[in-house]
Image (cartoon, rainbow, N blue to C red; front, side, top):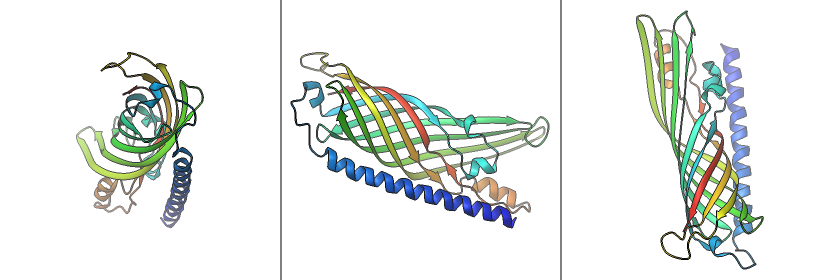
Length: 257
C-alpha cells in the first residue's frame, strides 16, 4: 500500500510539472504572438482578407490521453479515441490577429467483457462539451494560403458514466464536472472561393482549414463516487484524476463576411 502511495505521489508530481511547463510555454507563446501580430500586413491586401468575421464548422478526431484514472482501471486510451466537431466564430482585430470562440463536443465509450469473472461486462463513458476562446495569429504564405497559430483557456463540461454487470447483479455510477484548462493550436487556411459575389448576402469567401489542437484539462478525483462506494465495503483505494484533453486534428470550412 505504501509503495502504491509513493508511485501515485510521483505520478501527480510529474503531471503537475508537465502542466506547469505547458502553461509557461503557452503564455510565453501568446505574449510573443500578440507582439508579433499586433500590426497588419505592410502590403495591400486582397478584399477577401479584409473580412472582419468568420463562421466555421470543423470535423475531426480526438486522441484520448492516459491518466491516473485510465491506468488504475486498466482502460486502454486507444479504445477511447473518438470523432469530434467544433462550431466557431472569429472576429479579426487586425489583418494578422483574431479572436475565435469555439464550441466543441466529443464522446468516448468502451465496453470490456470478462473483466473480473466470465460473462461480466464493464462499460465506461466520457462525454465532453467545451468552449475554447483562442487568440490567433495569421502569417501569410501566399495571398490565398495562410498559416496560423494561437491558444487560450478551455471550459469543459464532462459527463462520466460507469456500469458493471454480471448475471443477477448490476452497478452504476455517474457524475458531472465543470473544469478549466488550457490549449494551443496551429493550422493552415486556404481560400479556395475568393470572390463568390461582388456584393450582398452571398459575398462570403470560403476557406478550407486543417488544424491541430492540444488541450490540457484535468478533472480531480473523477472516480470519487465509485471509489467511495468500494471503500464503504472495507477497501482503502485512492481517488484518481482524469485528463479529458489531449490531441485533436480537424478539417473544416470557414465562411468570411
